Amino acid sequence: MERWNTGIVVFDDVEVLDFAGPFEVFSRTRLVGGVASRRSDEHAPFRVFTVGVREGTVSAIGGLKVTPDFSLVHAPPIDLLVVPGGFGTRALLNDVATIDFIRQRAPAAKIVASVCTGALLLAKTGLLRGKRATTHWAALDELAKVDPEVRVERDVRWVDEGAIITSGGVASGIDMAFYLVEKRHGREVADETAHYIEYRRAPSP
Amino acid sequence: MERWNTGIVVFDDVEVLDFAGPFEVFSRTRLVGGVASRRSDEHAPFRVFTVGVREGTVSAIGGLKVTPDFSLVHAPPIDLLVVPGGFGTRALLNDVATIDFIRQRAPAAKIVASVCTGALLLAKTGLLRGKRATTHWAALDELAKVDPEVRVERDVRWVDEGAIITSGGVASGIDMAFYLVEKRHGREVADETAHYIEYRRAPSP
Image (cartoon, rainbow over all chains, first blue to last red; front, top):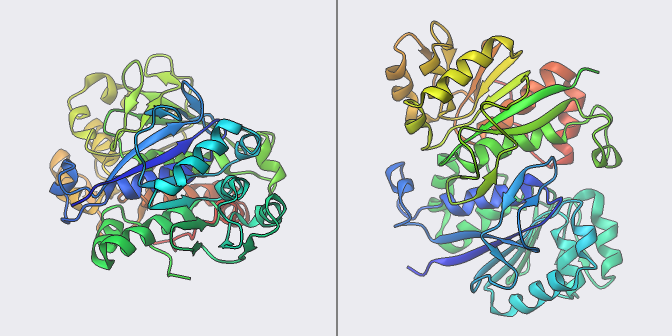
């Protein structure tokens, strides 16, 4: 089994559930079901870590303090790049290091996935040009402003464009994560993991 | 408005969504709806912080590193005490400082709420004796072993015993948190917050 390096970007004023939801789903997925398999990483198809856009501990919305595993510069190769949202994305739209990191890492990643207003950052890199995409319901117009050539989709929990997937606000990212688990490892693995964490999955759009 | 000090206990091998779910819900609740009200704490009825069972940064399941706001000794008064679960609870069953902290803080708290196997810790303090309670589906028998006088409930997302509320596994804690928001501030505030974070609430048991 090829274990996917799953890098989740974190920053000041990132929305907690935006990064914690996908972190939970990917880090608890096991190809062998049950409780015992969750006690080790032997059957874990994702190796999940956080990547901070600056050195040191970041303060998420509400004040949750998270110490990233890696900086932008030292992050290992990433197969699945997750870009969460939150008010902090607005400052990052003008942060060259962050935008360059996403732009430079995207071609090597198998999938780039955004949660909530993380889509604004993807749009800023140009990755969403000509593609369908979504974001938090309150940021749909903002997404269109960052790149008018994004085909903004409303009232969906996620939009799958193959190598790029964008989800709606906050908790939508949990559903998107399960969708990606299902896409790669099948319905049974995704549903069993949802059962393990007692999450009621949203139906596919 | 009286703002409730909401202390969420964190420890090594705490399940990420167990603490991050309620953290998200309580910290994003606003008595005035919309996006703008979320940019400040003016209309926030909960002041949310983390309490570490030991000094320093804790490593949640999957390796997420969280730096608590307070230690057990220095935590401020707590109105709503949230005890999450995870494999780390097993070691804490024998940790006198943690069990004493819950036991000593419970009488002053308006509500003590557990998520997942956090219920094992509540049971250990004796707080659940003679009461109905639930936990993660894989730990129901274990809960009955910690205190045989707990009336263990199966197949429910949460059990409300007034000053004590226990929820099922992991994501059930998000539903329990919304239930507590609704109980204190009404359906409209809870549903509007769920809409803000795009969470599909589970129906009440």
